[in-house]
Length: 212
Image: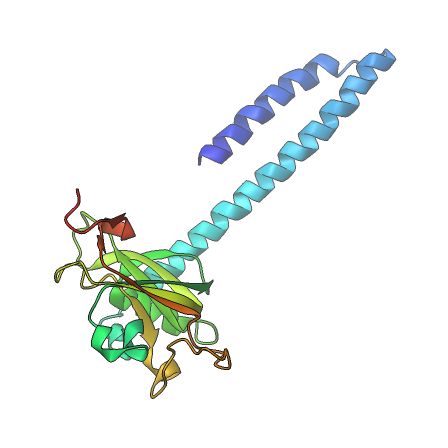
């Protein structure tokens, strides 16, 4: 909306300038008219890009809303990513990095799982960050992943942030270990796993254990 407003204001300014050079006669005035024409064309392209960006965002939101419907129980087919690394760490909060399959969405864990299910050829799991103040719990920011690269697990949360985890699709990783391999021969294994003796706040904001 902000970008669209800026473009609208810019076009109004250009229209005013165009009115001033509409009757250009001298070489200097013609030059100004040509420059103005180029600027109008550039602004028009920016407006078109802005519209495409907004349409893309709306499409993403619509897909997320559709995925969240009838999603109850979808997360049962997903386990903590750490389950496939070290089962003793599977209940600890975790974060991960990797390759995104889709744009981030806001949904419940079940909604995120259903969205991942919908991207059957790409999505192998998701990273979930509960959002503070949401009435529907647990609801949060969800990053759908097509590949996991690194993971960090947190030992200082003292039983809190239980939903703040990376989740992997069971059907993609069942009976396998994705713990890092020193020889680099495992294509789907993580490159690095880090232990963090601290916790984090809402939406993944890191903080020292016992900090503000």
